[in-house]
Length: 240
Image 1 (cartoon, rainbow, N blue to C red):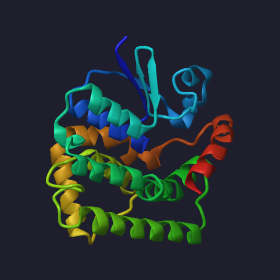
Image 2: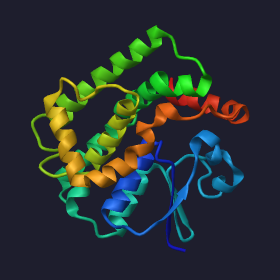
Image 3: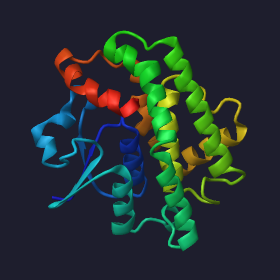
Image 4: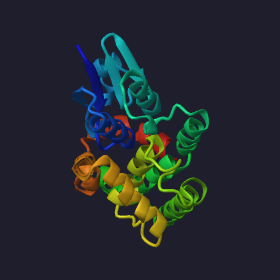
């Protein structure tokens, strides 16, 4: 059995892995895992990833969790262009810097914006309070500004003149609030131009394909009550 990727494109880390593998023509079998149906909590999926999270990778007898680890594994195993994860020590360190920063900052803010603005009303049947939503969107605005000021600055891409894993992770993160209807690029011409460069570098068709699910997130059907009961503690822990 060849490379298998267990993904749900509703998930930002899954989209980053999916785009990277498709863009670099890495052959893989897609194993869909529906998060809103709780498929990641099954005993069968736990055999692939005991953490019961996506994305997950299975390569023969080898399994791997965590999106950054998966992306780095793919860069090392397959012959991908150097710009994704450069061999130059300092250029590589800049990519690592973003990948380390984003977990508790941009990724968290973007995930909270999606859930507080769209997914809670779909999932619970009722919106969060206006005060909580306003605080979430204010936090998102601050974090996006940090991305622009500290990482993008006046460069073409986050770590230099070429697209890297940092850009791929960041753009898939920002599509969470875009899917929730947040205008994160409005009033930020440098960031908007970067968005267009990243989309062009990835390929418009692939970019749209990967983000089709998140852009329709507000149309998701309400969760099954049994599944909702299982998922809510995990969701609350993730976005608080």
